[in-house]
Image (cartoon, rainbow over all chains, first blue to last red):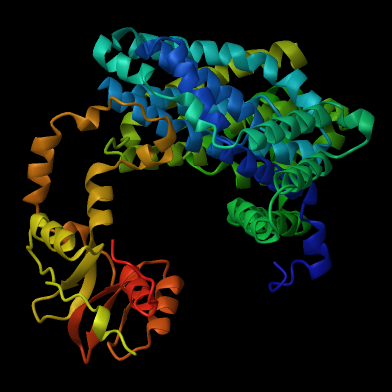
Length: 399
Length: 154
């Protein structure tokens, strides 16, 4: 954009949303340290044993655990932690992992919809519009249990009622030693303490007058400090290097590039023209516009990466505000965009990074997930979740 | 002081060599791996016990969850039959890229430095494109220990 003369360097840098980058990087550091304690694997194996290793019970528990983790961590990290446990359990139960992995893909995207930090589109929307953790919790979290329930009901009808395992194979699962997943009790306590502080910080952010990025970065710095307290100097250095090595720098730089491109498109006036077109198409009706955003976001997010889509939609929706009577009037549009972009990711294997990660792990374990087979059920199920989301948005904000 | 004294001559694997042959050679010489050569005798890669075992016996998710594994696992069923089958497989799918190598006239400290640089505990020894054998970290340790009068072979 700079080389083409659309932006100068100052304008390009001003387009970068450092709050989004700070929140992403801070949470990446917190999660990278926390996962080393083994707590997430402990919870996954514990939950499977809690239901006496019954296949449907395991599917249900792992789905709920995935949704809860996804609400607090990013989706990719969540499935990277849960999918290996699933593959191991299914191998021991001598059952196909497909229904389990399918349910986990849906759960990760549904769980991620519920909070500010659950999915990158929410982080971007929250940062651009100034929405807090509580705003997401109050506006998006209420609909996610219903969407989860409907999704699991369909999975039960399609696969769940047929899932079976012998006593012998279930006994193998009951022999798993979940406590041995906890490799460092001190680190576990420190990580859970900092994670709790960070979540509390997000909830109280408005009262503390702190941005989410500040809270995440503070949590990351605190956990880095705590986890190195009793280390020798060379171990400290190695630990810090390892932690920063776990930060997904490609994602961070992808966001930086994306923000600059969107800024360039915005400066060139393309988004203003698009916004006028959308307003003309919807007749300036907020309900029609909200539904259009919800459905277009969902379908687009099923087919292409939802992050660039949301990055483009944010300035587009912002520029519609004057036409609808101000920033407060377009709040339903933001919730429609978040619901559409996050839930739409369930529509196909390429809809979300987490889906591709699960497919990759499954393939390497000898269980290839066919793109079309997945989409045949996933796309209609995703559309059903969008129907639920549409009814929710309409009744709550537009009726 | 060079590497001749600790050199372990070994066979090499070629296309079609059975896994059982590589296992026998590595167990005999007490080394982690041997070179893989093409039809002209050039070293094009390496075959290691670790990679054969990892690729054929260990799914990725099991490594991730090593700590939680119990005492009963389905992969241990019919282990005898599976082992026999593995031994009769050709090694070709298990070939990895070329390994660190050095000349027999090199100093032991260079061997140590190369092993450290490549995070390994063995190296191939090649003189003028001719494979001579393997040196290991145990060989280097034995060489150093031999200077100590109090060293006792257990």
